[in-house]
Image: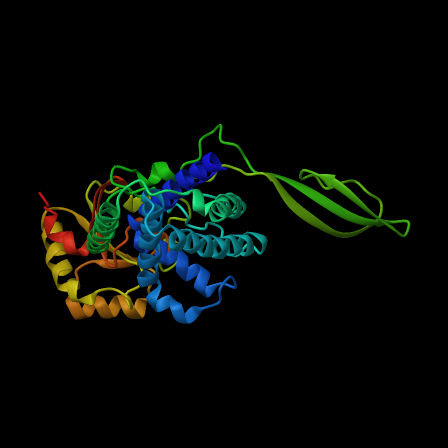
Length: 365
């Protein structure tokens, strides 16, 4: 039992630290995932959406702290019971989400490791079993450090998490796991390789023949049956390749200009996924930045999911000398964790990506 508890302690502690740190690297992204849970039928708590960011920061710091506390043996009974409560809640959440297909990615490991809903649930079940082992064998767990040293380590962990969270919130994630990271080419990210696997579906065709209902399964072809067609059920048996970047458009009046704009040798993209939630105080600096870029031969565009009534108002209020285009809100949230944020591209390749707090770092030749 002692060795099984030791194994469970190490695995649970490390997984909570890794999972928490990955989400702490991108708390804004995790807050978007929480908003999905709050607004969907999983939790149905829309009143929590305005504080999703605060909740995300608290949850991920708690994850890291509990992992560290478990490994060093600090307040072990409190730690283990806290882990149990947390994993029971997460297990319910991932099961409900998977069974009813509410949220297709739990966000457990941010954008670093994508898990399907059922994979997320399986992971939580394994963790639940390991934590139950810790509950049963709690009396065999011994601290590895003295009380003073444990307090210092936990305190340093909390302080470091707070400083790191502050940094990534006021700049951008320290590690970018998304397909729009610096150096990535957007067009390349949208391409599907010639040898990429294609999706395969089973079609269960229902017919009534001589008063009896029959089912014929094919993988696409309509069966030749002399009878009354009732319906068809489709089941995906093999997933097809999905490019890292999909559904990327840059539209104006229903026309997509993405292909043309991604060929621009000098392109500055001002990204504001929702102008109602943007920090409008920085648009004066964006005006200065865009003027400088245009003088240096760059084409400057704005991309937003907000309607023309908002984009025109911003243009007029701050005398912006560039046009806004429409891009899907989820795509814009994925591109940059800043509202607004700024990208510099060369023929579709992202050369620079900055938070609005860092726009002064951009220099245009």
